[in-house]
Image (cartoon, rainbow, N blue to C red; front, side, top):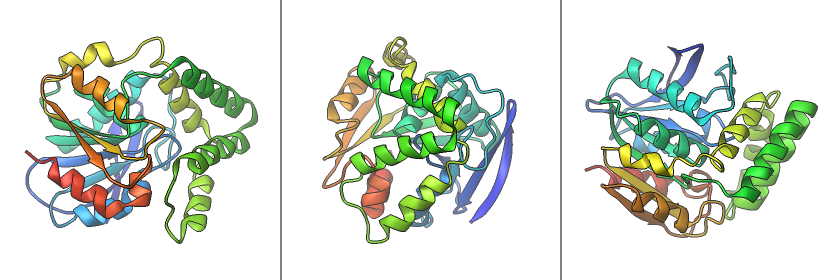
Length: 264
């Protein structure tokens, strides 16, 4: 594994690179409260086939918060800045990262060759938006403890089939949250998708899009993927059997196989 940073706007984006192959790189974008290491097992499984870069989203992991504005557009712009540095890319995003990837794909940037969303959506309901905003407000007032509470609540609710070492891995995830400012920024970006969903802009995407949906995902169920597919000219849904929202935790090999199956 190679690690480094790429300047993108006002921040340096930290990445973990695995594999060394020709063709478009795969840029992996994690969900809220995670960092690029959440893709580690999947990257190892992809190593024989593709070059992958798992980035740390603004304010997460080793990427600084910078002049964050709580918008999905800024997070998408960060990804496009990274792509500008690494060249033609397949964008793969989980949950919040999926929304970021879809938003980036609406730009029409010719370096974006395909997009894959895992457990993601193009719109956030009112109650979910209120929850995101409540988390952001609490974190901004109380710091790391509130971030750990919000992230822990999500993991408890959404990891249905934890691996044997999950207790240690869960603790490491919570420890990696730092002061939680990146979580708060991501929560505000997600909440913005209630008054301003990205669904109307999906028609601007001209590259193929695949949506991967955990069979037991009750955070972003299949209906969310169906809404996205209905708005796109070239999109399809692939179901992931026996997993919930956190497919990379519950079945990294099944997820890697499904990602490789999206190649066209």
